[in-house]
Image (tube, rainbow, N blue to C red; front, side, top):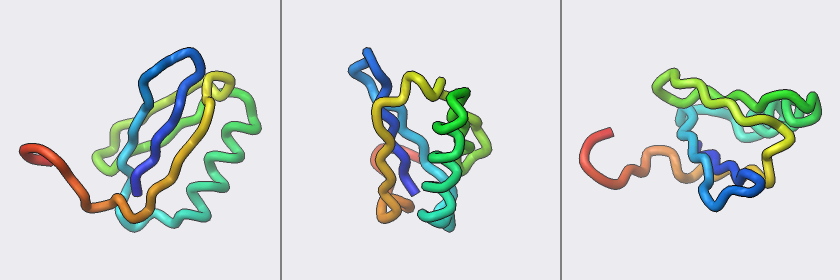
Length: 76
């Protein structure tokens, strides 16, 4: 599953590739819960890398469950 996070006052987006077997509804609930806490939104990608974004800086979150398995470029 591919997650794209828009950040306030930044033209760049943060993109995270989650495990392909991630459940969309459980990911939504986890993101909603962490954003409601007002602290940090933490996601762990399919390689185990952790990405954190301050909740106050999140403009939007886009989930694309169909993007898993797609790769562009050399190697993954």
